[in-house]
Image 1 (cartoon, rainbow, N blue to C red):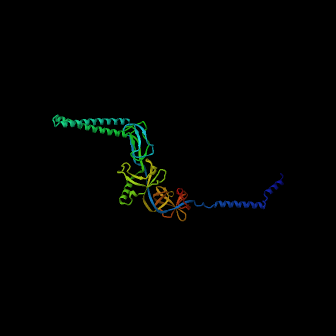
Image 2 (cartoon, rainbow, N blue to C red):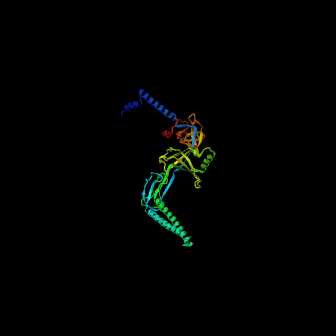
Image 3 (cartoon, one colour):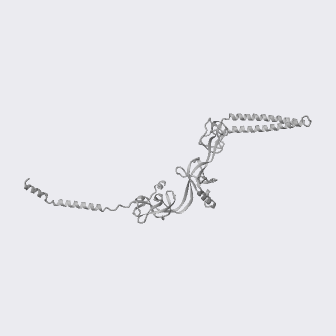
Length: 395
């Protein structure tokens, strides 16, 4: 390249840009600077959204629950009273039976033979007695004529008395044989529901054997629920009964079944045991519940719930609104300016899904029930009404 050409290239490189290009570059630079400025001045984040519930004030009943065990009103153990082989079962397991209904039969042959022997022995002893009576009559006729001696008369009297005793013994043996034969047919002593048979046909059953107990018949309507009261609870109820403020018989008693449902029929106090269990410090109390259709069965576990008192003007908040920190109960209160205040409270009993608050809140105040993890003391929040999903589902 000659020197002239080099100078031309240098002049082209240092030539000013055209005016439209210069304006475009300047505009792009301004936009870039403006964008950077806006990024640095981004607005602060919006306040977190939380769900709040108002502190409710109303009169509420205070419930108490005890775990109970159901048992039949009467549970009759059906036992074999004589020894023999089981030959028949006349009832259907798990079905109702009537008082006097035949349940089992034990082979009666041995008992029938014993009864027949007792009858024949009674007849023989009666014949002996008759002979002794006739002889005594003859001796008494001959005694005035001195045809027999006084000693003969005394012997005749003794034989007649002995024969009478033998007749009485024979009658007792006959009654015993009849009872033994009757025991070979086993009937139900009560109306109720018969359980599973514990002996099978062909088993040797009877007192002292492994198959002495045959089954159980339970009267189920009404049915008993046994609960255990602590000594303090028992003393409280006993004093209230003595003072007449809350008679035990008038308490509203409910039965909560294993599936969480409330039994349709209310219960009533039946009795308290005679003593306190020294091992557990509790006393057993029985509650009666009507049981039409035998829905409830012995051995079921259920909860007995009772209204033990009423609390007027109680303050209620959702249980979700109450937290615990270092042994203290705390709630997050949303003040009028939507700022958050963490406040300690004193809780009492639970009513459904709510806590009763004894100290720390006032009626109408708002507490955070959902989203409390988003709020910090002193920060501002955006409150929304709280909806209890469980309560809404129940409705």
